[in-house]
Each structure stands twice: as structure tokens, then as C-alpha cells.
Amino acid sequence: MKLDLMVMTVHPDDAELGAGGTVAKYVAEGKTVGIVDLTRGELGTRGTAETRAQEAAAAAAILGVHVRENLELRDGFFQNDEESQHAIIRSIRKYRPEVVITNALDDRHPDHGRASKLVYDALFLSGLRRIETFDETGAPQEAFRPRLQLQLIQDKYIQPDIILDITDFWDIKERSVLAYTTQFNVSEDDKEPQTYISNPDFMESTRGRAAEFGRNIQVRYAEGFTSRKLLGVTDLFHLI
Image (cartoon, rainbow, N blue to C red; front, top):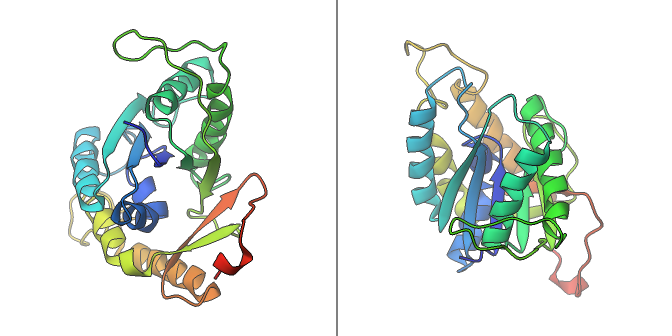
């Protein structure tokens, strides 16, 4: 299946938090959209790899994505090495996405920036025909490089290079995030430890960030992204 848009991020729930509205928007417009998680999030304080997988599947159903896969790299310990790069290259060549969104360039969680660099390097290598990879049947894969990579803006504020109106899709985004019941909006009497993201105030800050981005383009809610390269347009009158 060829994808128009792939969100490739390190932890289950990164895609929903950073780009859930964007995903829902393009699904609604008939684009083929997928999510690829690099790890199972097994080092998370709350929940388990198994519950995270169940929550990820529930979130994917809410968003309506066409595919969701997990590359099962080691949470916290993956490296930007040949093994990890090859795993990503195989996924990129399998789905051949036009646009890839990945983690923030720099963030509070060290996995985020490291994953962003890993994906960036692997996307370049994926376009080199002399790097050989094979699909699940053993057939050779063709070289492929997406047209565009964007990065999320996550916990650490980074000035966006592009902002997308998600006003009509905020409710879907919020429901997809809250599908991670072990991670967000957890009551104080829950037996597992509270975390930075489990307090209900975290979701309020997420809404506030979306409102802030939206205010910059005169809409209610928006998501912001960064780009490593200059972005061009063919028509100035299509800009908000």
C-alpha cells in the first residue's frame, strides 16, 4: 500500500499528540495515511508494552489511518546505526510515502531528538539504490525517498516553519490521545505513579498550544511543524 502521509515517531502516542489533527484532516480528505511507531514504549512509567499496543490500535481506529505498524526498536536504547536505519528504510520503501512527519529536532525527552535524526538519515539512505533491502517475501525493494520530511513540535517550544489548521479535527485528535488510558487524564487515586503527562493539566496545555498556533493564522486550533529545508509554494494566494 502506498501512503500519501506517514507519521513515523518513536513512541506510541507521539503521533497523536503532535500530529493527530493533521492525520485526521488528511484521512477525511481521502489521503492514504499511516503511522509507524519505532518502539513499543516499553520503558514508560505507566502501562506496559502490551497495553500501549492496545491503546495504539484504538487510537488508530479513531483517526481512521490505513495502517499502523511498530518496528520494535529498543525504547530508550535505540541508536542511529545500520540496523535501525535498515528497519526504517524497509518501511519507507514498503509504503513509499510522499510526506513523512517525525519527532521534534530537540526536546525534553532524549528519544525524540535522536529519533528525528535517525529518521532523517534513513530517509536519505532510502533513496540510494545501492543499499539493498528486501520485503517480507524476500523480494528486493526499490530505492525511494519522500518529497518532504517535517518534524513535530513537542514539549519544548520551537518556532514552527509551517502551521496547519486542524480546527474541524480537534475533537478527533483529543479522543485519539485519550485512547491512551494508562498515560493521560489519570485520576489521583490511580495505583500507578503519576507522571509528567498523566496529570489532566497536560491535556489543557496541549489544547493551549494548539490554540496558540491557531491564533497565529486566525483559526481556533492548529498544529505546527518544522522543516529542515526551505518550503516553496506555486501560488501565493493559497496561503492563509
